[in-house]
Length: 433
Length: 176
Image (cartoon, rainbow over all chains, first blue to last red; front, side, top):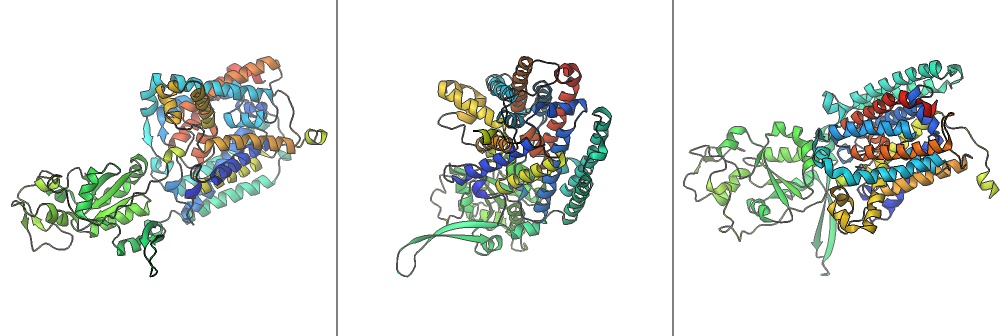
């Protein structure tokens, strides 16, 4: 089973259970916050006068525990991290918004969710905070147009995680955060002793055991590491529905689940040059041609509008492909023949980029289909496998006629359609932004 | 009604234990749904829903509301809305079970109830304004983004603490 579950990744009327799942998660959230004492504003505000650092302890314990479990599960291949919502980074609006939130926190004594726990247990100040919250959110909606551009672009860095920022593996960051959290807890207890006059001898000894367990778990996460591309590739599956007519003659729609290697073996991921070129004129899909060959070959000849991403550079742009492309984007990888393009395909599907296909026969087949009558392109019979099988008089890039076939001349090309558009989960269904 | 509301008041959980439970809840949310926790988004969605009831044309002219409630879009059709109402219910259930359901005001010793109410209201206005600007509050950004290692969420978390600590001295009358 692949987590997170596709069926409850967003609420939808088609699946009423999704409301229940999110409702139960919310219930557990509110219940826990109330049990932590966050219905009482004094417990929250005490944080900022070093009297009582419950906020810091609860928050960082929760972050550390969730992080260890999450990246442990990611390392074991249980959770696909690319399908987990990661808040996109907007440094400008994030930092200014954060500072404003800090002001609201110390003035109001709550944060939004703790005010829910407070209001629902009869605290009038919690109710007032909630009411104010509705006004504040309303005011933001009414004033956002004043700084719309800044809000949407200032310091925008997309899906960016700390391991990418520091250039280390995610489990390493997890271990560092856990170590930092444990150190902060020690410091927090010292502050409580000094400013809050708290007797640390009365604190449960069990907390040391917990700290040890957390640190040990973080080390285990580091030992598990991150799943290799190969491991992720083996877990990829595709759904294909086709109409089958059994012996008794009644056609039936059958949905089959296929592994990535099966898809390749059955040639279901190879789109013919005709389909690849027709895709450009379809309203429903947005083809992106990823040319994964060397720069020299790309300069000699490439399909119009192709993006040049050599195979070696492909892993670096996967996060962008996942985060930035519209849901109806179809990626078509292009090599000279198929070998390199298939490698690129494997890498992309292992990274869970949706709707990736391979140009059947590569550039060579493309030229054979659209440029066979171009006298400038001379066949090169000596070319080896996955090399260009044509000689080019000049490195014209996409300015050969066949790079952008004339739609009037090629209107009635026949092909077997292979592209099955899969709309990936709605990323706007994530986060609370 | 007595047995319902007059239960013995129990002590709060130890912070580390509460944090560990909260961490497991957050992990389960990420595991099952791919989403973390949150609540401030629901506040603005409920707002958008109300505005859409009263002035649908205004929604279609306001870029921020348009995204949530434009045309025939239902702003309440989002994961965060059931989480919001679930959290209200969960807080109530815990308060009831642990004998903490009481109409009262939590405040510092040196201010009146009315001052506390006014400040809570003003704080709510400011907090949610900032939360919508940062695209998430302490739950959606600091907690959920923190656990998924989102770089921007860590920046926001530091900014929240910075904002509160910087101002804390000047509003100490409210709490000390």
